[in-house]
Image 1 (cartoon, one colour):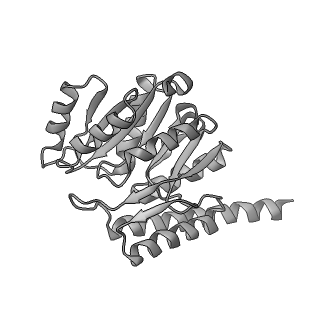
Image 2 (image 1 turned 90 degrees about the horizontal axis):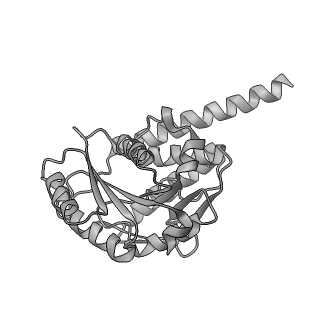
Image 3 (image 1 turned 30 degrees about the vertical axis):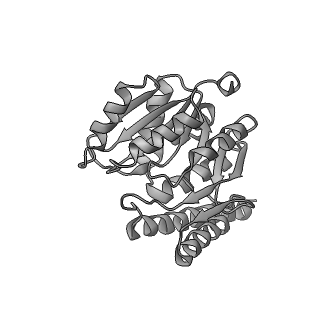
Length: 249
């Protein structure tokens, strides 16, 4: 069994108004990977997602629910979940969206890659990676954003904004995530950059990303603007630091 080689594995599924999706995603994960655990992290969804999550957990001992008092952003939800996982002695944590855009059938590829790596990113923009039901404008935005990130931060990652990924708990410890404040896409970029800077073993595996069919996307202009602004700030700070080192020699 995979759990014998990886230790305890936890899939973290953050939710906000995912009433119609939460049963589907948990069922699919349990079907594909019956030996691993699931943590649903609900940000006090007004549509009752948290209550449904409790009902699911009541019938399955491998599913837990973490209730948060308010919607405070994806990054904050994941950071709290990482702390929960650490206290519960998990060895590997997986980030996975609740809306069906991350296919449970791709989970095995990500977990297989963790055997030889510290951080594994599910990638849409590597060979054999795909995106389904996105307009060309959305594809260009994602590809362009990732190219911009690679140029500014100098990281060899083709899909730093993707949210389907796995971390060894030892990797999170090495990355020092205590001061992470970014949210949305920017949170994923921040974490990927920290992994590279920490000289961890980072791998990308191809996934098929499917645009949600039920519910509303959480993507907004504010999230995009935050990502562009923070990446630019980080890039300027990186180049300034490099220039100072050169001048100081």
